[in-house]
Figure 1 (cartoon, rainbow, N blue to C red):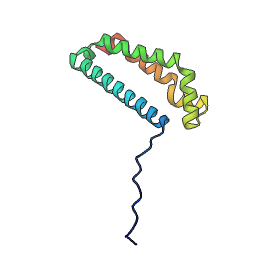
Figure 2 (figure 1 turned 90 degrees about the vertical axis):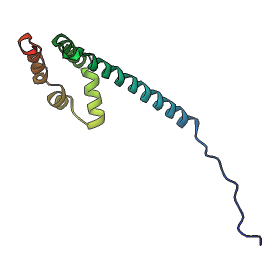
Figure 3 (figure 1 turned 180 degrees about the vertical axis):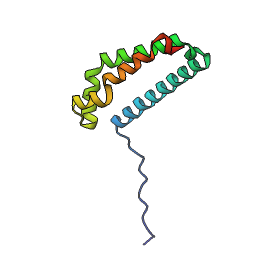
Figure 4 (figure 1 turned 60 degrees about the vertical axis):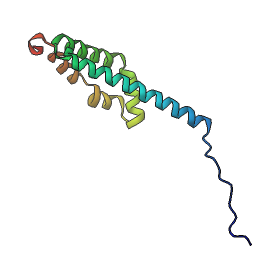
Length: 110
């Protein structure tokens, strides 16, 4: 015998759906990096120091919670098995909204 036979090297085969997922993940990461840089530029500009800007961000957060409440509950149920009442109590409750509204008062924002 001439020694151990060498098997031909196989090139790695990556299924198309994995390549597509990797491309989508790369695009998502690049988008996140762009958004992060925009946030850093906003912070460096000093705009985040203005009470009016902070107030508008809090109002936007409250609006998002109200508009997306059902989606938030659905996600908490799917991911954590939370009942809507439990999700509301623990994650989206009025106490949080009330405290945020208090923080938006003009006397507190300055």
